[in-house]
Image 1 (cartoon, rainbow, N blue to C red):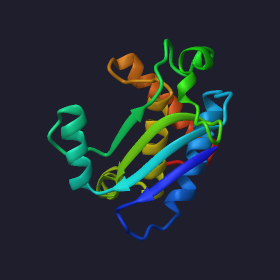
Image 2 (image 1 turned 135 degrees about the horizontal axis):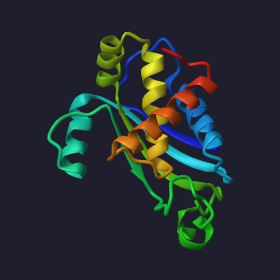
Image 3 (image 1 turned 30 degrees about the vertical axis):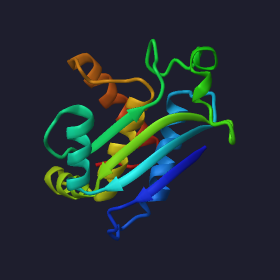
Image 4 (image 1 turned 60 degrees about the horizontal axis):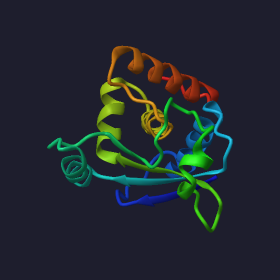
Length: 165
């Protein structure tokens, strides 16, 4: 597994964001039974930068906590059975890893939301990475049922890492 991590935010955290992102990504892939070695890009940035991305890519003119840019199309979430047939160009030719996509996190929102929800910045960061990984595996939360399923899976992933509220 490869995590290509970039930090534009430049803040000191009480944990290693790069290391934590790797642990959460690995736990998410294990939870979703991904049969491939995978590659994920993670960018930690600020509200101004994520605001521009949210406006440009989603047409929503405000900052957000996390953006997910999946590279795969799934018939059903976490169904990797057709990846080699239908998504063959989604494998990095150098490493052979399945390229799942990009995660963009707002450091500003991580700080704001951790305080608002009364938990640690480590927990908020891990929660957002797990949430985004589920998007990279084909999950969404457009309906109440989908949202509950994502919430359940996010909590299971965090519990497997002993990251609780």
